[in-house]
Picture 1: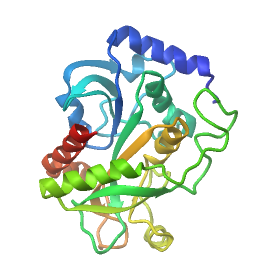
Picture 2: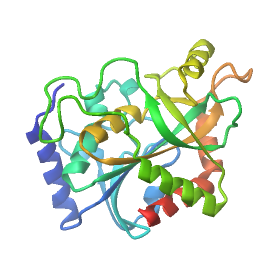
Picture 3: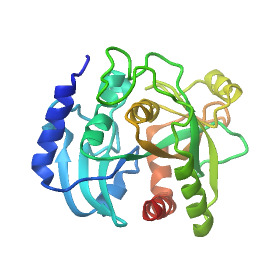
Length: 274
């Protein structure tokens, strides 16, 4: 499906009617098991995805499926508690639809988080990774089809999708908090099956440090909209073939719960410094 600029405006207008004069500056997309930060938003107004015109529902485990507007560490935020995935049956344009709506609402910065498999054998499950770049070579772009110039150019630059200044903010915050923050490349796979050991070896050869089923489409769309982007990955498990054990959804959610304190301290400190 191809969305028109009017449809994006209709979604934004509905949300404005719910939040009044509030104008968010920082959008946050929280992945599997990481939606708890949305519960910490002050003076919060929650809007269900199901109620917003043209929005899709989030069906993945650990995703509440709502937008939360309010303040977090002094920042005016719009927090997505859960995201849409291509493996749920959605097109990439549908997966990244919310990013453009949040841009219309005033967000100029996007913070993305995900839980992903660790490809780098020098690291371990439970580590946090600052995303420096991404690889998405599977299937089409979320920008496929007619370009909407109201958001950005037909052929946008993708050389600095993850904003260097925000990456430096994250490094400084992690150092001051005493958090060991890895830095690496996130590689997108469409899922929903986990990657095979051969695919993991391919990802490592291609230069990836983590593999997952989200984030890349939203970040491409944010870059097209001219938004600054900061991304974090929770390395929830070692990717297939590294350890001789099967992978499971529960493993991802358990890892997110175990890293809740460390993860939230880092993201909140970054918000303070933006």
